Image (tube, rainbow, N blue to C red; front, side, top):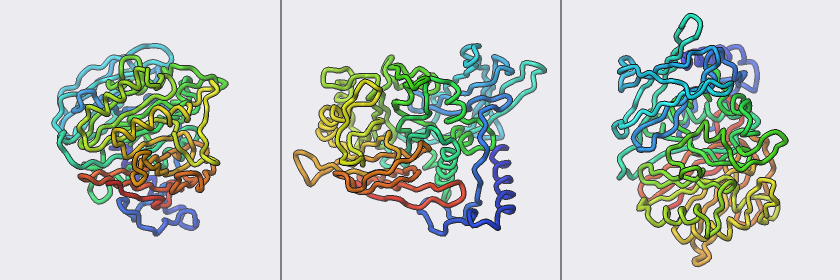
Length: 447
């Protein structure tokens, strides 16, 4: 909370000193959900080299659905033992539990603690305390999160984006605006749910320094650090999670699993599912696990789609079957780590149609596009494919006239997705920088 107050004061100071510049003028367009009277914030200088904390604290959901796992990684001058405490009142935490680091290697010093069996749709405040090896001075980091609603809930708001590699300043801007959107109009408890990430977190996912500088970018004055303390991220494997120097492609994105050790994973595989209120979410791996009809992943996917009774089923994976490339012709993998788009259309898309999937979220292409693909058995029906590839990666120009494309633009962005009963509304917000209020890029409703 202290870091958030400091950030606010710095923001006001920066606004005062920069009022003579046109670049500090707030866009007057009112974006539904985001309060238009926003204090301008310039893009901070990102540093992954805090003197004590290296990554986090950040959140991933606990496997029981009613808890949260808190993870953090410290610098080498910090003790191997830390503490965590939590409660429903930020002024009165409960017992401080001891947590010991997972390893002492150069890139270890990671702490993992699951807080479980929490009440439904409730806010939990937590505090992590780490200690310097020399002298034992304590450093405290605080955050809070919401647990999921009751299983029968008919409403849900969540966020989605992807391809955050290479531009941590823009990534930070996007996180800043997501945070403002969650708190708009006093809707924090309903909107502080989770964030879906469509893959390509960093440029070389098998090299530690990229996770430091491009994704977690720990600095107490960044929106990235603040958001990660309060909202869990659920992602999928992108091709860049499998790259090391060269880049050379490997079929084991080990650091992705290290930093996102979801309890939802199927053994050593990277595909998983989870329920949240009225929706069943499925995250696929189109890089390191086969997905043809004879594969374990395909059989698991069909079983997931068949057995779930949730009214909404939403699919997430990195490489899109349909995009806004020139002519949108399917790609065929040449063994360089790229997925085979033709195989996706042959194997995965018919399953989506068979089990009445309405929305598929992808990344990989560095732009926003919405494609509406007619059903083979009923051309009046359709599946909506969204490419949310504008989280920080270098933008490319899409082809708005490609087959099935409704909207396509070369912009940074994120999506807010709201389910209310039998209606799903998606609002895609274009982000220019940390100053101008995001404007609506696209908005549509699925029933």
